[in-house]
Length: 157
Figure 1 (cartoon, rainbow, N blue to C red):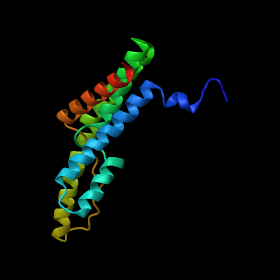
Figure 2 (figure 1 turned 45 degrees about the vertical axis):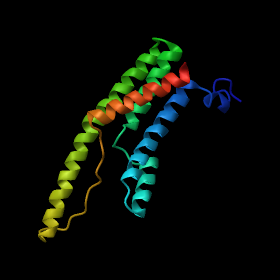
Figure 3 (figure 1 turned 90 degrees about the vertical axis):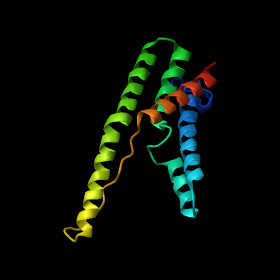
């Protein structure tokens, strides 16, 4: 085996990897549990499983949780290194995207779908809805960030 890569067991004992993985899984699990508590029928259970495995948006932000878990774990294991600085700025880009670009495009796609449905109801045109991308509000980002930081601390200290 190539000595530069190492064994896969090193990956699964790496605190940065573990922090990122459990932050992502934890945030998605919390989203699914929130959906399940709101569930009224069997289709809602299916929707909760889709949320857990795939869907973006909602409380808490898994993007923020994962990005800040990586950055925090890097800080705690490597100190103020170049790797930490890189991870910090990538985390800021991810969070900015979740708050800004994805949220804006999600709101625009919702408005477009509402307009298209209205025009289709009036038989003005046939409309195929566009995919609605779900971004985050500030509370969802802050809770995700806190979750990621906490999980990184657990795995690194």
